[in-house]
Length: 212
Image (tube, rainbow, N blue to C red; front, top):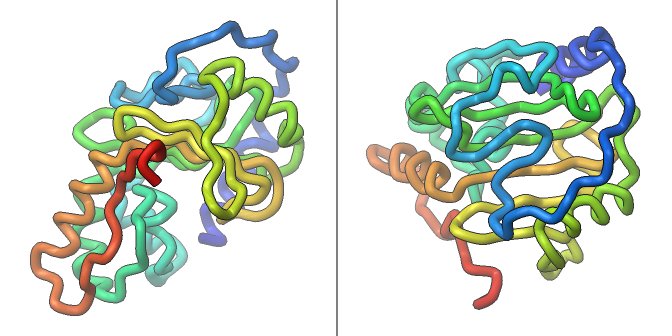
């Protein structure tokens, strides 16, 4: 993932800086969009100041070898997979784009499936991330009071989509968001396990937080 980290740093550093957006009015309860990135919708090119895309397989091997956390970054996979060949074959069905959002100049790794957004990892590896508490206020205004898992991580969920707010993410410390569609995760898991004799599936991609 070092290549991706450096690329996001370069793209965000070169992007024109903008003022913080105004307060966000109350929105829908399903947490399916942020910073111009909308799940289950085509990627809105006018929402980004920079963009570069690969197949999921190319993205996973851009550093020269496969990193086992790649499918977590791209589809929010619920567990690690040891069968690299099965993982890379499954990732070939997806597109990975690194973008810089015009809103707040965030760097995002966005996964595309069937021409629509399936997942996004959003961070500010070059610095300048909004304060965690400020982002919590914004998201609560948009989507209501968050759930909280057993690790104390706050998230919003509904209709098999989830939005997590983290104090640090896979690319380092600082406010990080993950926006994911569990239906695409399920599709990915089915592809990985179709001809996989190494890994046994143990966890689902989606659990209703009200039943946890």
